Length: 339
Image (tube, rainbow, N blue to C red; front, side, top):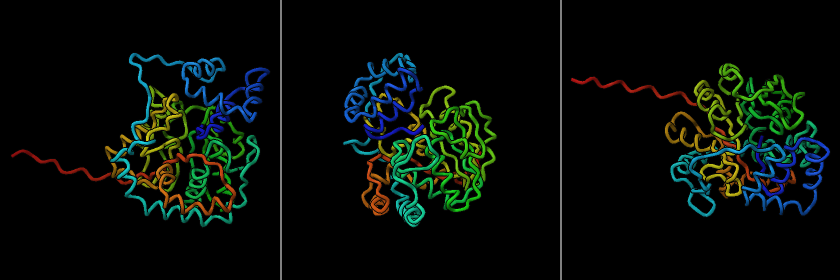
């Protein structure tokens, strides 16, 4: 369920959601292949009312009625300062990120075999897929290779599944893939050890409650904090169950900046809940790799630039994976009895 990050990616994002049919899917998918298709779709992104009507007509959106309209505009980043406390928190892990990136780059000989482009409907991972940006794909491949987890659980499957299976195959990992997704957009069942074709909110938490240190869980769902949504269930019911040492990856996280201006009518809200967790209890989580922060830093970005040159990866997708590890909770302070 990864969201594309360029205008061309937005066109692909819309087209790939459409069901195939004589009018809806087939015609619009053909239109999006045309070289001039970016402009009208980009225009629609800037006109939310018409955009919503068109997407509703194709069954891709449902209206939400609110009492007090809010005009979504970025408060942090995009010409404004980043959120100061989140930026300071992420700055503290700079050397750790550099170490991780250097380790990922050292896998270049294996990564050479992954093509830049391939068939969307196939099971081969490829870098220019429009859904999982290259740095996000690299981090997933790299963390799985480094950790060799017993289990990798992803909530939202597709290109991430392809890269995960490739890492397992390339390095003989012991990792079992569990996919939780009601309807993956890619044909990934053959790549999974366990396929749960339900939304997360209908899955028993015990499926994730027995993850061990080094295991990985990846949330790439609706990105919206609503009553009973997958994001709400994850943060309120799953995250507190995870044991120290478990790696958590969340996608479409742009911290320490806000969501991009061109995403404002998607009404994503997931990263605000994540930021609240980080600010309220920073000792509970160790940030391992905030890809949006890494991409925005010239020195860190430069560490991986030679790899992209070697692989021929040039599409400027904006990375959005946020990796963190659960830490041991701090012991409670003894209560002070009144004298």
